[in-house]
Image 1 (cartoon, one colour):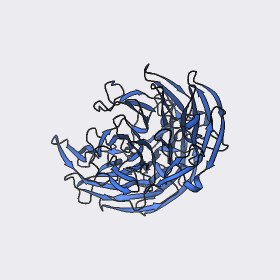
Image 2 (cartoon, rainbow, N blue to C red; image 1 turned 180 degrees about the vertical axis):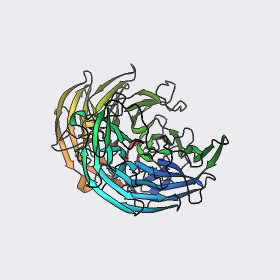
Image 3 (tube, rainbow, N blue to C red; image 1 turned 90 degrees about the vertical axis):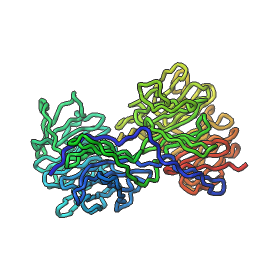
Image 4 (cartoon, helix red, strand yellow; image 1 turned 30 degrees about the vertical axis):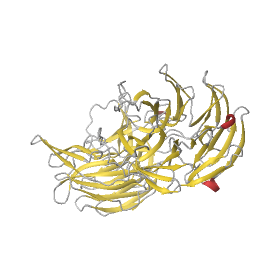
Length: 629
């Protein structure tokens, strides 16, 4: 039988925090381990079903900084839980789509592996490697075959649960940008259709018999964003170039398509599938999941027949959420954010204690200006202002009494911030980043704290403040997620702060794709990193590079994150550079980089200086290095 389709929702929580990490550990050689910032995991698909004894169980894909590391099975009558690691390495990847089949099997496809979990046997019962990489959409056809379409190149895979045969059809639709296929459906003749986004929407029809695919939308009908489609009970598939009341509808059947005048009646085939936010709540016996909370480890089961709710507590293991970056806050803490789940944390070196809060979103880039701490985040390119001296109040966009307080957002121009500069004037906050999904060419936000006004300009991924009210910016050729790369090389440019006009720009290093980070150094010079491997010193007045060196052979790549914080300012004019393998210091005369210490773990994200120590992140863990005098 088919289970009824349900609403997709995220598992969320508001108040609880994770268990406190252990006290800091002295690793020797000036290095310290301070623990896990957010000792929690995030769900990547949750379904209600039954096991082999007919008991109600909840299946939850668990995700921490390692990727999709386990499937959690919770007994909905007792709260007892079991974990099942996938039969392949997660490789940092995780489910982006999953499906509970009519045969009561739970499928997903990530890190180039298609996998089946059987709740009756309480085991993974099939897995097979495919062409890269992960399913963005899945469906089940009328013969019970499971279909998966994968990012980034529209790979198509089918699996027959009866004869246990997997077919990898390879890549069937080529574009010069990474494709998202969020909607997949089959019609009653066996043709498969999938909707593509985000640079230019498309609906692709795939014939399993021939293995051939064809686009169904004319080039002039494609839009920036994602197409939409669904399978109807009438056996046909219906779709739009964008899912909107204003867009026309198409009808697809047996590999053909036509525009229809109107589509007022919609009866979707009840298939239990969705994105990483899949949250199927209904058990076959009529009970429902009211809450499955990974923060509090709490499960609420509602019985509509008796109008009662049972509460259970469950356990799961976690190595913690990925740290996006850290910075010193006005209260003497080291603060930042994690993903996923989206949490904000503060670590106090003085007391060796942690605080952990629900975050408004993904804290991509953070920094201090005076007595305030600022956060630039994904999604929507939001900017928040936190006052550590006041009580924490979860951020709401339309509530000015929150702390952190919502200031503005910048979508689609800035959607994923990469750099936050707190200007020495004490009132200007500058944020740069890449644009919304499918777009090319990001933006630059100037926020005036005194006037509470903003100016939004062109693309930037790194910045440094110059004398005479100027700003040096570095661009990237990377588009928004799923967008088309159009520029051949990145540039440096000088911007007049007053007029917000570009006074100069140049591709200083031919072929460079990204100026990863910039930092104002001594003598009015600017230190920079290009493509995480080329260290250079730039004289903005002469608009010339005075020193450069490819350091990859000796030092490897610099740390890299959406808000990388590669450069760390120490005492006086001392500047440090964070590499994956360790911490270096810049000689202000020769510009040579000296390795001070090799980290026992890869440095994933920077980084700030506080009271003689440099703090940095590795995965979900916070570390520090005591500078030797």
